Image (cartoon, rainbow, N blue to C red; front, side, top):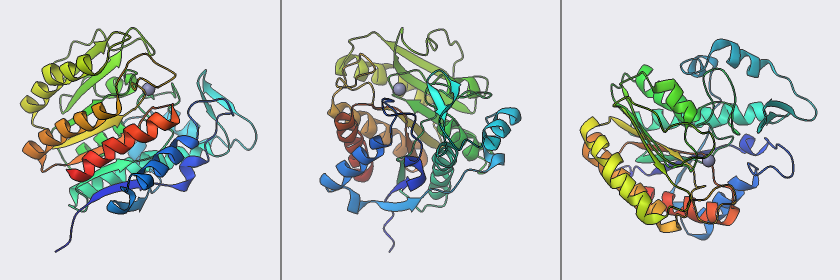
Length: 310
Ligand SMILES: [Zn+2]
C-alpha cells in the first residue's frame, strides 16, 4: 500500500530573487524554514517535489494579459527595477516568481490525483497582495489565486475556500474573487494597517475579520471559531487553500499582532478538521509573509507538523 504523505514543494530558483540587503522579504526566509524542518525532525516525513514553472495560460486565469506579458518580457540583467515602492524585479525574480506560482499549481494537481495528503509550498516571492494588473507589497504573481483558479478551471471544482492568516489583508486575492461565489474567502489581519483594505467587504462569501494592533491568541482564535469555521462548514469546500503568512507572530518586526508558535498548529488543525469533513483533507498551503527568521522557522514548522499529523 502506498502511504500518501504531506508534500513539500519548493525550488532553488526561489532563492534567486533578492531585493537588496536590507529587504525583509529575503532568500534566508526559505533557509530558516528548511533548517527548522530538519532540526524538528519533520523533513524526512515529507514527500519532496521540485516546483515547475507556471504557464502564461495559468497566470491569465487571474492576471491581466498586459501585466503578465510585461513581467514575462522584463529582462533585468543588472540592479533593481521597481514595480511598486516595496517590490522590485532583478535578474533572479522572474524564475523565482514562475516557480512560486507553479508550486501552487502542482500542489493542486497532486491533491486532485490523490498523490499527496496535503501540501505546503515553501516558495517566494509571496503572492496575496498581487492584483490582476500589477505587483504590490513584495508580491509579483498571486500564487494562491493561481491555485484556486486552477482548481476551478482545470479540475472543475465548484467550491474552493481560500483562507489567509497573514497579518496583512490579502487584497489581491479578494480583488480576483470578490465577485466569484465559487470561492469563499476568509481572512484575519491587523487593521488599520497595510494595505488598508478589507474592512468594507460586503459579499456573503468574503469573511474578513480585522484585528486591532496588539491582538493575540485569544482574539485570533475567537475570530476563527466565530467567523471562519461556521462559514467554512456552511460552504462545504471541495478544496481548502491557505495563504500562510507568519507575520502575525509576536516576534515579527513588520506588524503588531501577538500570535505565538502554538497558534499556527491550532489554526492548521482546525482547518484540517474542516477539510476532513468536506473534501477528504485536501489542503494546500503556500508561504506568504513572516520576517523574523527564527519565528518564521518555528511557526512554519508548527504549521507543517500539523499538516503531517493530519
Ligand atoms: Zn504579510
